[in-house]
Image 1: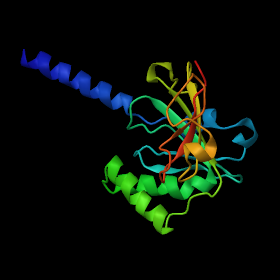
Image 2: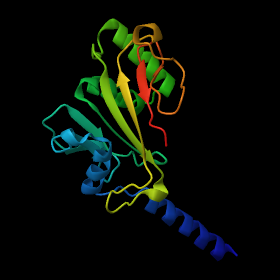
Image 3: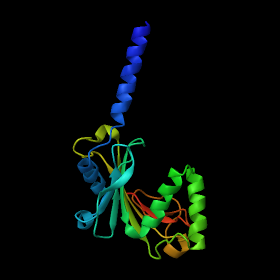
Image 4: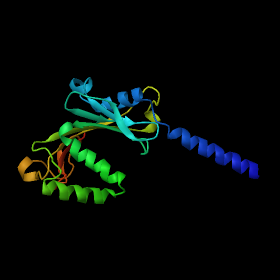
Length: 194
């Protein structure tokens, strides 16, 4: 009985370790670029993960787009590309989480820094493209993702419904709306209907 338990435990541990394996740089780049508009793909900077799970630059870029590969420590598949004007905001968020801050603490700290002018945000809306999917639809070796969904986001602090003419709650499928209106993290959400 003890042997059966140990064997079962070993199988579970081996299975869990196999799931946390990090895809190759080539695979991560291919998946990250799923979120990138065609005109930016060739020269976009790509951030991804080494075999230790550390975020690194997988490919240097020469245009205004930064793409980030799927985080292997989070459930599901999610990749994003965004305007380099948002990199200070995005990088600061990653830094705060790495320091052990909660999601709420991260938001509060960035608000203080944005309001103080020490964390610079774009004066005009800056784009983020996000592609998500299920791990069951992801090919670890090739970086291909079937049945994915995309959403488009435009960030600019303190946009209001009155200023933009957008609703501040989701409406019809695919209709743009303003999330977190009149806050430091206000952003226009566009999620195409499935």
